[in-house]
Image (cartoon, rainbow, N blue to C red; front, top):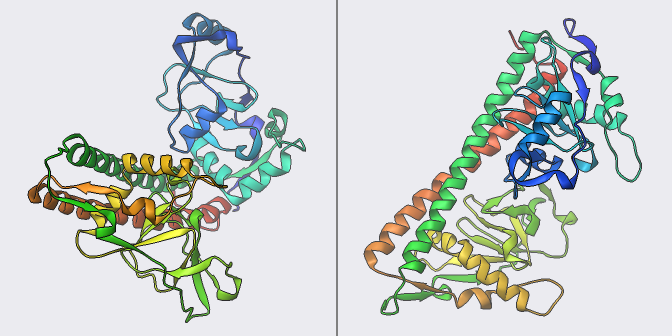
Length: 396
């Protein structure tokens, strides 16, 4: 840490906001305009909603007087729970953004690597430091003055760049794997829509109901070990089990009842459209799940991978959500009685066999990617605080 030097952020970049834009400035087509919501979504790799625009004339007027963001500038969300989320401008072309909720770093000095700074903001020390300068009671917010006076220790620029490169390479790989899975899931949606919906014909004689293929099991867990992993509806999402942390069996809630095993499909009874489902691709003897999760176990007639893609296809989920919302009760909810009567029409043995091979191969690839994502994420999260503190030294 002896080579690290302390700087005030105000001395490393011009920290400012944008020119105020009014609703009357919006036009149907023109220069892209971002609010903090869209910038945060871009930073997190999420999909933005309908775009907003201001006129070319208004944009040029603002740019001539106040400037406009360029590649390499930094935008930081300023308000609320997501305050501090950074976005480095890259390949956006001409655009403008809403003032107040975003703080703008521009004219950045050469000794300041903004990508390194972004990772610093995401680190524990960065988050705690930002919290210490936030103002407000009902809704915490960062201020330009507070950021200008914020002191930060930085290694020499080459080391900043090297640290940023290491962490960026991990994030780039994680992003690539996420995008691969999104593509595979879209392909599965297209396949099922084409083969089993759009080309479906009344004269097809081969047909299954879901109850012919899977059963809903409710086998009470015996809890042979002291520690166990509990899965509630919030612990599974879009095919993936997102919690693998064991707790003591004495800490389990009352709804922790059902045992599961490898190749089970977990499907939430509540709000199907929320995507709370998962395919169990691991040995799960030491897992117990909530009574609000259906445990769908194969009857070994058709591949469980095929059934998984059928049940999670958007057309199926939309139908189940409609049924759930038609039910009177506190929550939109389904039971296995609604799932078991779903019909799977089979055009031919050839198409069925081809689709089964595709489903098994694709699900295996998705699960492999998810495993890599977890490994790389853990590696990044372990390295981040060590690199940001100088505990791990990186050669230039």
